[in-house]
Image (cartoon, rainbow over all chains, first blue to last red; front, side):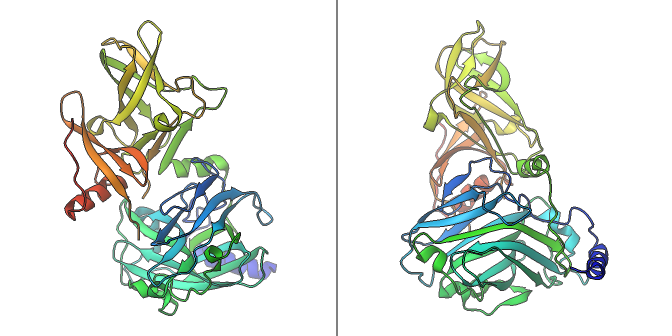
Length: 373
Length: 60
């Protein structure tokens, strides 16, 4: 890029109101993986924080979604889809895509639903064993608007940089709240019910045919061992794709923790103490998990009890206890603190005595908190 | 476009006997879901209850 072009682009970005914090997406350099670095392609599954796969009515597909160290210059990681067992055919009512949901209040800079609505540009690095035409769509949830476009992978197994600009939506506003504002969808397969409408980078009223409008290449999930990788995704206001805005790991982690938090014990932390609280009766105690970042909503709680074994707690005499179930207590909890009721399987609490919840001698013991959109 | 498979749901009471949360199995994962309409799991449970496709059983 020439210096003159760079200065011109900088001027455009300034006009669009964002010299920093331009990227509306989180973790799009694929750094943070609190849930782990590999997951199956079951619809709704996350691997890398904030990114998940969604599908409808697939019959055969088995594969993985992983954090991979193969990435273009300037990046350390990518999100990789690998097909193990192929989907034998894509029926009209089937689809598969990778998506990130954006919180509505973070999209207010776009001024959608007004004459000042700003264009949006998405840029990304992409690599696949399958060449061809793939769809990208933006769906605004509050008032069901959709815009879609396509990109073409020209060379197999080669990193390519793509940019797409969508026209701002003057008709449909995005609520200024903590709800779901926008889907950012990268389509990997779509039946004819979902791809038959031509692409249109201007937002329109939603219809199924626009969901993956213009999508052609389903081969990533219909070809054994096919792969698709993406990283460096930037979604920004304006009609100009600017250089990717790199953020530190700790910055990205904190952003991710608004939606998901997990603490897990390693093999050297089998007595990891998660949080502390108080016994109320011999079989009853509440502990208080203080979240390092304010969460989007009161989160759903899950633990490793079913997979790893009972967690532990301390009795008043310092002895260990077994904890076989955890329950979040809504009326005592907030976006800052989750209060957890403990079910005792062995040992007894003493009313009024302090206690704590720990890993119970297990490696891989965890608590996780989900406030995703 | 975002359908959760909910196979069980039961209210759990706090120490005062009030409903404190819902113990649910969603997409194969057991979760303790707070009674918060902004929580995606609670919202989906209530949507399915409203649609008549799910019943949240009372606490034991």
